[in-house]
Length: 146
Image (cartoon, rainbow, N blue to C red):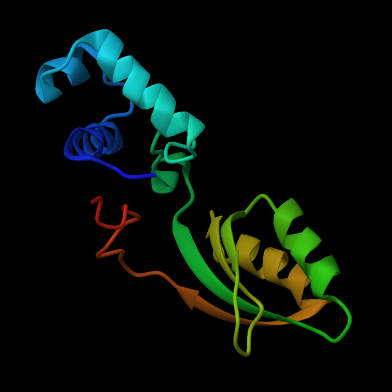
């Protein structure tokens, strides 16, 4: 799907505030609310917009540690490890990757004890390498829209 300048502006506005009203969006891009609604519907149908969300700060909820874990399943346990990662609530994101490791997982935990308990469950089926995140100079963002 080709994204034009107005679609690009709408996407940028929604990334900044997914709760923006059609009226607010229309005013910024210079279209009517029904025209904006139709554009958003088209972007949704074409899979450009997958959903609308809220950005929650895990630290404000007591999750003081963000941890990146490289996971290398033991032979014959790839699917078991993937299911284990999917079912572990502390895993907030996980990518299946090429290379020496099969998964890169992002965890949020309240304590080092919780991290140890979580990793112990994974370590029964996989080797792990862990890094605690000190800061996040670039937070999740969209690639250039054009």
